[in-house]
Amino acid sequence: MSDSSTHRNATTAPDNDADPAVYEPPRSIAPTPQLSTRGLFIALATVCFVPLFGLSIYAVIFGKASEHGLPVEILIDRRPLMTIEGNSQMMDDVVVVTNEADFEIPNLTMNLNGQYFLYQDKPLAVGETLVLRQAAFATKSSQFWVPGRYPITEITVTGKLPTGARGVKEVQF
Image (cartoon, rainbow, N blue to C red; front, side, top):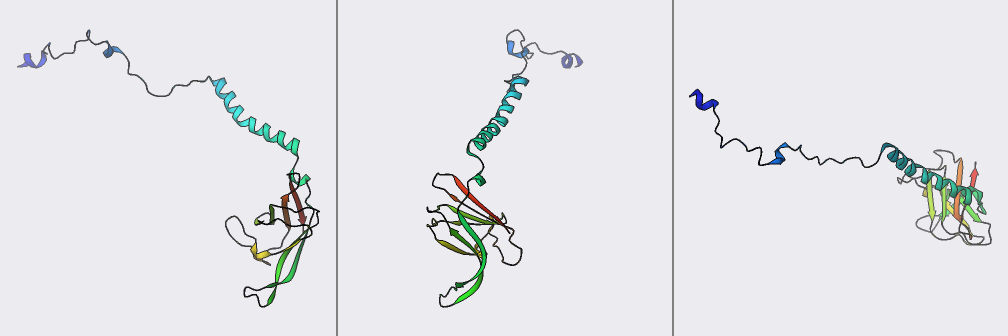
């Protein structure tokens, strides 16, 4: 019995001469590097620095937005505004923006303290005065400005100039 267990049958053993794939190492399906270390460094540096150089050149050619002044007057005031019913007026904290230019100003955007924003869809006509409730300004997460809770330290108004540039007016309080 020990003879049969240690003796293998020649028909069950694999024929190593017939199949050469048995001796080949397994094929790898993992990705192989196509770039050298220097090539990879150059590619990553290009991806990082080309946009930086492009934006720097753009800033040099066109300048900062604050270099293009916006001819508006900005005031903080308390004025009577009509109530929702429309039959009476109530004193409210407002921001007053007056167009002092000889052209209308489209795309008017205002912000209080750099956090609370308001976009005016309608262009501001020549000589027009826009009276806006301070409570209408909101953050990007829809939290509204509460007049009197914090002081207004800065108001920024931006609008499109006839040249197509973005005009900016900043007022510090």
